[in-house]
Image (cartoon, rainbow, N blue to C red; front, side, top):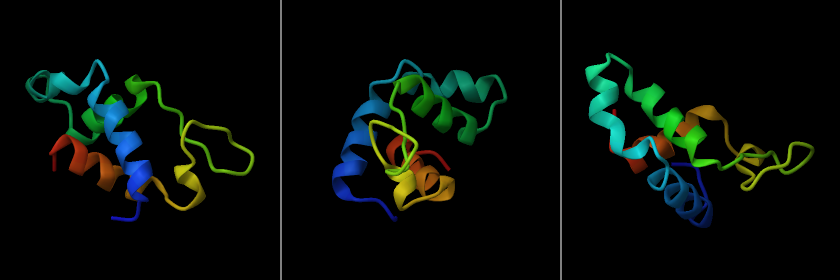
Length: 81
């Protein structure tokens, strides 16, 4: 997984604190994908992701990652496939 440990911990704290995080079963019962659940957890966490150059954020993951790397980290945090 391509993420700095400090960035992972910040991401994990925010995702696990999101209002969506405890709703995995509801997402599955509604027929929504695990990917949708993961990214909704991130979005609802209020954490903004920047690129370290021109796009400001609370965390600059796009400086060294893309969405596939972020999704891998979200999979690990949420325990989804």
